[in-house]
Image (cartoon, rainbow, N blue to C red; front, side, top):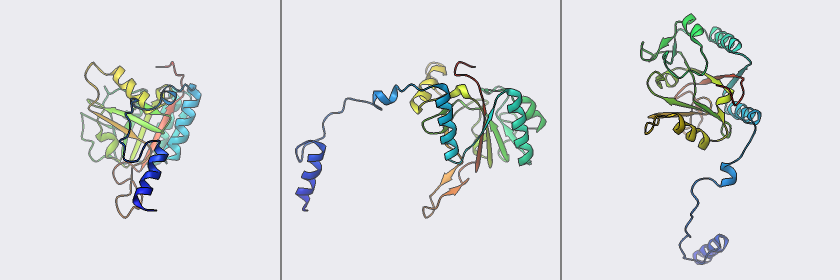
Length: 224
């Protein structure tokens, strides 16, 4: 097939004459049927967990705050890290984990150095069901060093923070931010850090943590 026939074939499949410019597309963003999907709280949480785990993330579901504190403590015992770092006390923690942080002598962002920690503990802003992604809005006491530097990242989150799509997460970020002050840094975490920069071989933990464990507190969509 010569070039002219080849281009004519493509144009016909696109529904326009050969050589014509593409038509104007008035729609912006995803189609309405996709943007306005409605799923139940249970469906969103199940989808988020399945997709996060499919990306090599780990989920620990807890039915109470006491169970979450116990699970977090057990994870730290199993890891036995030489040093632990965490967001500062005034960061937007979705669950109060101060007892565990104090027990393990966690260095707090903004108060002590956290550049050489082995395990970092943070909260989260949202979980995205569509992609199995944890969204962290960083700033002030919620320093990004805590989850970028260590080999292991432990995340504390509530099920009520799980939204359907990335668009939902961004809209919610705008809602909770002061007018004109969206977070300067928002990190999207879909499992452990991956890189295929060298000879297309995937390597885990090169540009961030090699393990990400999410401690997910069971609550309703109308919870805190």
